[in-house]
Image (cartoon, rainbow, N blue to C red; front, side, top):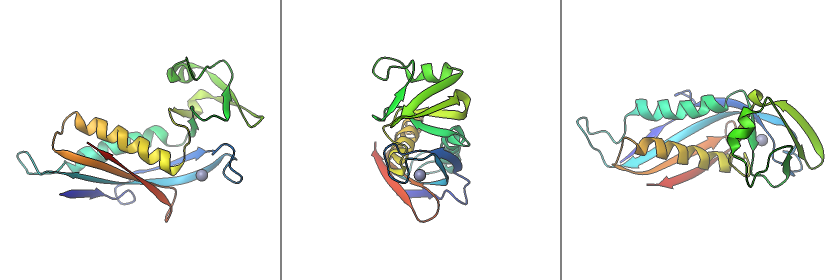
Length: 171
Ligand SMILES: [Zn+2]
């Protein structure tokens, strides 16, 4: 059986800035009002014969939304972003979080930002495609801690109404 949590009525939303390095129009810092739809497939189980408790799905998905909300999303593993004093191949992403400020260049353009204004993601892009994969994998991992009856977790990350990408994580 499949359950669905719709992002707009369930308040699974976040407003963030991002940039797609190298892209003609999206290569400039800009923002979206995102919302996230979640679909979970699994067997009904437990005392109440739920697939999954809606409260858990909403709570875990909202926590990810809150982490990204009102920040600039930075895809640390993008090939066009060069960080100062940070080696992508060796250093932990937590090093960036711990710095007071971060300095990086994209295509020769220099940026200096307080790190508290940013979220550093272990991704090559912060496209809807990559964000949906990030959400689905993070949510699946969290739900797997308490559920063993689930078959898949699909997440659609919408960059506003009418434009989204879905990633399905099999369990
Ligand atoms: Zn965009």
